[in-house]
Image (tube, rainbow, N blue to C red; front, side, top):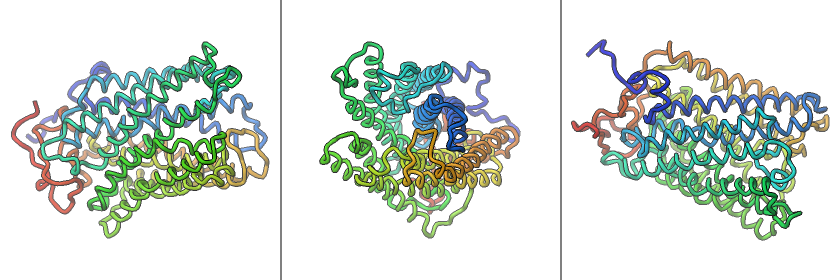
Length: 543
């Protein structure tokens, strides 16, 4: 009835209690969105201090000890409390049940518990920052972290250890949900590629995260009880720590980038009005990246003293993992070919992702090459490569996804002109920040140094100027998205004319996502058909 108030997940209950005790996957996604945004700006504060320090070569803003803590807390906060959980915990939580036609995740209470565990881990890490910080680098290399550092290593390690359980439980929830709760007719090869990418990510969550947890427990045991696990003075082996740490932390790179790839697949299809070219190859490429990602940790250790033969094997395997990544980029590009492309803000982020991810991926091949890696080891070349993949790739996809599904999440439209402007500022600011660092690294500027030769200053000033522009690009969406919550135009259920079950329910969705059980009769991205030819909704309500 016209004028009748429509009930949805945002207005069905009010009050702090209704949010903090909710088991609705959509509300839990919002809890993650707010907390992860907070950690993003905390990590951004540390990054700002780093770039201010590097404006001048003399190191005249902070002392070396403080600088060590700044880059450590930046890395810890961004990697463990933003990049790893961002897309799965926010977009995955919100979208996966709707994309597969389910009313919620398989274990709603476990989902809420995952958020609380994440918050507890974050509080431990924030407490470590407030107490004075930690200076080991986010890699916690031993025996410095386990024996010699007099900073708050234990508190930080406990925070990361606790947060790891949140990742494991989220991954478990996703896998069970995707296996058991798909709508009738939604076969594996009709699933959106967003779901495929989260399935592959969840496998890494479950198999890889316990290895990091065990490694951090060993660091704690050595630090507290003085055991000789990693300390060579007590018979331990510091290289063992590197093996254990990178066995998790290289697959963790794919935890950050695989969900981003899933978002980009949705954006490219939606704004090209076409099926994803080579859908099956892109789906299996996600699984291939997840599997091969576990076999390449040794390329972080080319100068650790491992044998030449081991280095050669890891070099070849690192080249191998580039193949499924290249398949995805090729298929996205082929999808764009002769597509009916519209350059809305989410698409700008999607195209930006392809550009910076390609640069990051190609420079990854440089680092997989034994001789070149020795030349640029621990220089800013590595910093630039890492940020092109993690920041350029993951953050652009995250922002693109937030803009794409914002009307669905809130029922409101954001100001498109401002959104396009922000996307362009982010792209320009990002490249001005990090591309000079490739040159810095090639010329020999080491990472983690706050004093450097004067000949590197011009490139460092360019990088800091780019960071200022990038910061503006990150703050703008925060402002206009919050503005749109109250003043944005009301969104219809499918403002983009996209395909996908999430676009077949209201904006914002009702509490149970769908009033009746959906049935799927065609594969994802069937833009050649009308939605009514792809999805049908029975008369039986969910039970």
